[in-house]
Length: 204
Image (cartoon, rainbow, N blue to C red; front, side, top):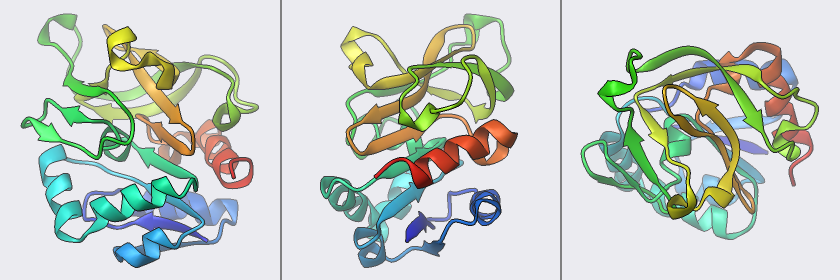
């Protein structure tokens, strides 16, 4: 059973709709023990990092996510849920879960583009299991002001997909059983559904 985490910061309606469309067995839960006992977890998120971490901590979901990840079962973070997998965010100087080394930074004002990035952008990926059957430079839907950094100092080996919005940034990450997408696959049409199906059916 897939558990979709409910912590008042997730786009649950769209995620549920996508999972129903795919015929995937799932439940929505805010219970730490349910999360820990799940076969797979989807960790969505929209909003502000400090507030999200406060809610996770108050419900014991921060520790539950860490314990779940330590068991080697598949975890997929989406948008803010993906960022929270990192160590630290510039957004209100927030400590995150630290499941994947790296920092989250705000897009600089000097890139000549509107911040936040809202809309479609292409992704160049590493053809790993999450992207199996998805053509290079496929477009996915993004909504974010902060981005996942890449580069040697930020452990770029975890990056499995890259986009560019004035500067290159990590659009998808992967470390062992932990996956994350900065974009919203549940809002990204057929390519996004294909990616979610890969997570459901191909990643164990």
